[in-house]
Image (cartoon, rainbow, N blue to C red):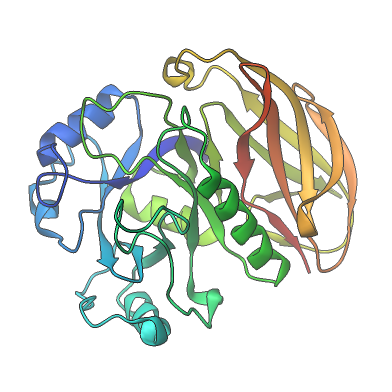
Length: 315
C-alpha cells in the first residue's frame, strides 16, 4: 500500500467548469496526480466520456442544493437529489449508501449567497455514522480561509462525539488557468483504481496536505496498525513518514518552513509534539480517544498547519 496524491472534487463543461472531460484528465495527469473523482454539479453525464487510459477516475456527482453540497462517489444507481431538504438528508444518504456510494460533505463553511448559493452546509444530519468524509480543506491556500478553520473545528467536534469520519481536501477544480497554491488528498491505495480509492476513504486512510506527503503507522507487540484503525489502549510506537518534496512544484511562491509534528487528540488538544523530521515516538493511547498527526510549520513567517492525517481510534 502507498499514499498517493488524488483530487476528489472536479468539474467540467458538463456543469460550470471550463475543462472538457479529457482536458481535466490530462491536466490531472500532467499534475502527477494518481487518481481523480469527476463530481459535476447534479449530473453524471461527463462520466460517459472518461478515458481510463489517461488517468483513473471515480464516477461521482456533487449534489448542489440550497441547503448544501454533498459529494457522492461511485454510486451504482441514481439517487434523486432534487427533493433533498434539511430533514430528509439521512434517508437520502442511506439510499446513496445502499447504492454502493461514498458520501462526503463539501466545503461545509463556504461563503453562501450571493457568492455560492447553497454552498454552506445546512442539512440536519442525525446519523453522522453514515457520512464517510468531510472536505475539511478546499480551494486555494494562498488566500487565508476562515472557512477551512471552521471545517476543521466541525470535524474535530464530530470525532469527539465518537464518529469515525475521514478528512479530505478538495481543489474544487474548474479550469486550467487556476493559479495559486493547491493541495491534495493522499489516499492509501493498494491499487490505483476507483474501487481502491473508495475503500481507502471508507477505511479512513486519508491525509490532507498543502503538499508534503505525511502519514504514520502504529506498532505494538509486533503488530502494525494504520490510520483509520481502531486499537486497544496502551503504549504504541508512532512511525512517521514525511516527504517534504512530494508536491514541491505546487508550493507556490510562499516561503514554507516545516517545524514540528503534533499528535492531537480529543478537543484538539496536543498529546505530543516533536520535530518535523523525527521517525519514531512513543505515546500511551487512552480509551475513548482519537489521535491524528499534524505537520506544522511557517508560511511567510506565519505559523500554519500544513498537513493533517485522519485519526486512529482507541476503543
